[in-house]
Length: 261
Ligand code: PGA
Image (cartoon, rainbow, N blue to C red; front, side, top):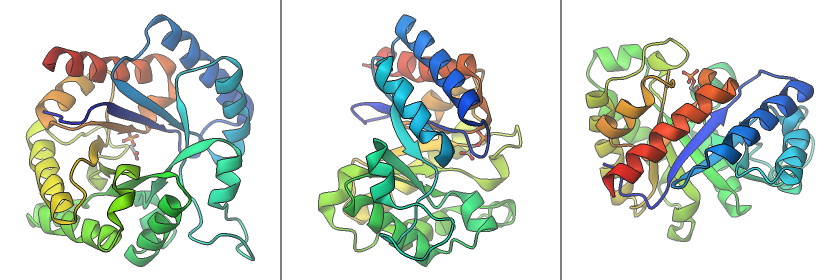
């Protein structure tokens, strides 16, 4: 089971919802949260960059109990990097969290291990919280190499990170074969990987880092995954685009946590 003092659920909206639609979803989440507040779970919304300002303003004006996240950030502070966004720009919009090295960035936008490590450094040095995404593809899993693969990803991104940044780092285990496929990893597979990740984090001096799971999490499977998988929360894609299902996932985490205390 989780040993984290609070769970964490992040909604990754990916490239969905324009700013008007984003406002609407933010409002709906706010209304449901007012009726069913999460007591043990931190909630983060990660909309597209162009939606951040409107979501930030609704979160502020309606006092919604969520924090803002970005799906990506540049490893550089400023300059001639067409199409990129910096940590300073995100901070001005009250963004507190950044996903680093999501598998879609790694596979579609050539974000290699070196860039992932540099970006993670930039994020924590800026005082933001980094959610490092790791996970194997199906070929690696079929060969039984998933533990070695994910451990290597963790070492490459986190080795040498100053321990003073430990509290700003979370890890999301997202097997690529489970993302957006409707086929989530089993509780057993997640538990095994969560313990591999925790052992590796401990070896890197980062014990206590929250370990999340992501990949086809929905309102129906969230409760069993969080208890059987022993994770500290979720990174949710598709199901975070519907307020009711996102809040049901948060409710499942919260309920599981409360039941185990
Ligand atoms: P999914 O995406 O929940 O739609 O599978 C998860 C993710 O990519 O973060």
